[in-house]
Amino acid sequence: MHPFLVHLHSGLRWVVLITILLALFQAIRKWSGSHVFDAKTRKIPLFAFISCHLQLLAGLVLYAISPRVVFSMESMKNAASRFFLVEHTSMMLLAIVLITLGYLRAKKVEVPGNAFRTVFWFYLAGMLLILASIPWPSMGYGTGWF
Image 1 (cartoon, rainbow, N blue to C red):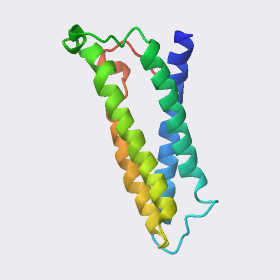
Image 2 (spheres, rainbow, N blue to C red; image 1 turned 135 degrees about the horizontal axis):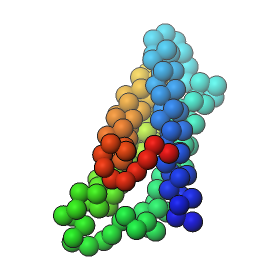
Image 3 (cartoon, rainbow, N blue to C red; image 1 turned 120 degrees about the vertical axis):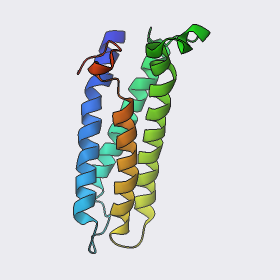
């Protein structure tokens, strides 16, 4: 079960990144003008929102069963253990909170175009946090591209 979840979580990373990028590009395109954040234009940010939450669920299950997450004082002395125990988890949670807030606030905006500004800034902040906290292969934590 653990190897499957690791591959699922790692593969979903790409879905999350692509859907957030698509939402950012759409927000930039519709930023100016009288574009309404309706059911049609809401789909791409919604897919990003959903993919982030699916990734969160897979990550929480992994957090509970992964041998990389060890709850001890020694874990804080080891960079890899500390990364998975505290840094990765807290930054990803914050990123998903930002994306969630951005989507929910954009749905309530009444001025045309402002909803896309809201999506852009919240999703951009979430994307930057996600990119900063992904355990890229070059970081030396024993992770791969997929």
